[in-house]
Length: 427
Ligand SMILES: Cc1cc2nc3c(=O)[nH]c(=O)nc-3n(C[C@H](O)[C@H](O)[C@H](O)COP(=O)(O)OP(=O)(O)OC[C@H]3O[C@@H](n4cnc5c(N)ncnc54)[C@H](O)[C@@H]3O)c2cc1C
Image (cartoon, rainbow, N blue to C red; front, side, top):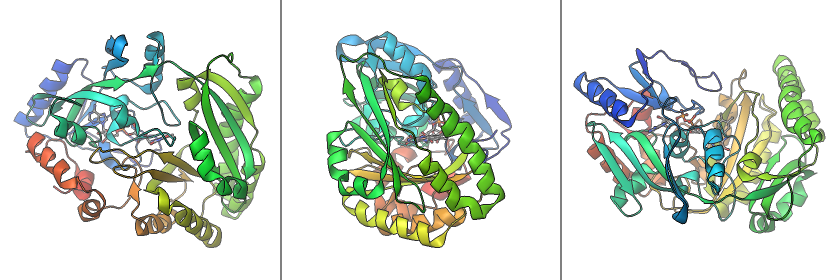
């Protein structure tokens, strides 16, 4: 098995593909009897070894689809293995859509919520905030249900759980009526973006920007609701988003890999090649981009108030230390929530994501930036690289103890653990 970027590889003794809730429960019961460890994998798009195990790996790839839809309340209950690109289509057929999404749609819905995956938008929380209820099989083989109104404390722990409480089998999503977005991508001066950043977060439903290291250039992306405008897309958009951002970019990445002295030039060429894109489409298709160039990633969020200082420091360090990188740095905003292990717990958060081509060693770069984020109470995205310990987490998450108490209750024999989770959450 390997993760999306290929950075992590492992050999489970057994990989199981259950196709029903009963089959998932049976597998867990057998693992309990045999005292085996279990990890569950979604699409394997996390950069941290959350899914790594040399014992039993469970994939829910054969457990996908809609279970039921309550149109009156815009609630959709789905099988936990459902991939987001399939989910988007299934919901659209019902006249529904998810309120927000991240920038790809290959993940499973359970994997998405289990790491606190997010998109961008000042009024929009992580994807986990869209969950109204869920069921999971715990470490005793029991099927547990929790929701906004039932087992509410457990629900707050289960909305972002890193797969440490059990195997989520079904998820009820609070959707909204299907909507369309007009997206505008632009090449802009970084200073123009920074000097009007608050208004941009405020005035766009979704706004984010990328900064190209060693340059003064930014790539901005804003999208807003439209009602009457017809679909608008063009071959030029397709060429830009599919060919330039993937195949042409791959050539640049290989060049900078072969000749690290080219990093700066590659970043400048990438910035200069940004083409303005305008399109109008169904929301789930607007959020999703193609990511064919493989990279490794670290992403931290910092409290919104700390962001200007943090970003200034990031630029200073990146420009002066000249790491072996050239990927643009992504900046997104997320509304605060009350989910125990959500990085956006209790604070409006700005997420800063840094990437390194997967053939390059990302560690020196990530280490330097992680120090900056940590100095400002940064919290990592759980699916992305970080070096936190349980002591660090306790200082960052006021409800960490409550989460651990639920973990003890739901998985007393630690069926759902691996060395990485032991290091991160404790054993
Ligand atoms: C190209 C790319 C783009 C990305 N873009 C974004 C983005 O825009 N925003 C963002 O926030 N993140 C982004 N990510 C990160 C990604 O969304 C998360 O890592 C997410 O968790 C991956 O989902 P997955 O289905 O691959 O889960 P996996 O990586 O397979 O698993 C993640 C965690 O979920 C657990 N899990 C999976 N299924 C279940 C289940 N049924 N029950 C209990 N636990 C379960 C696993 O055990 C593991 O702990 C991106 C990643 C990549 C590679």
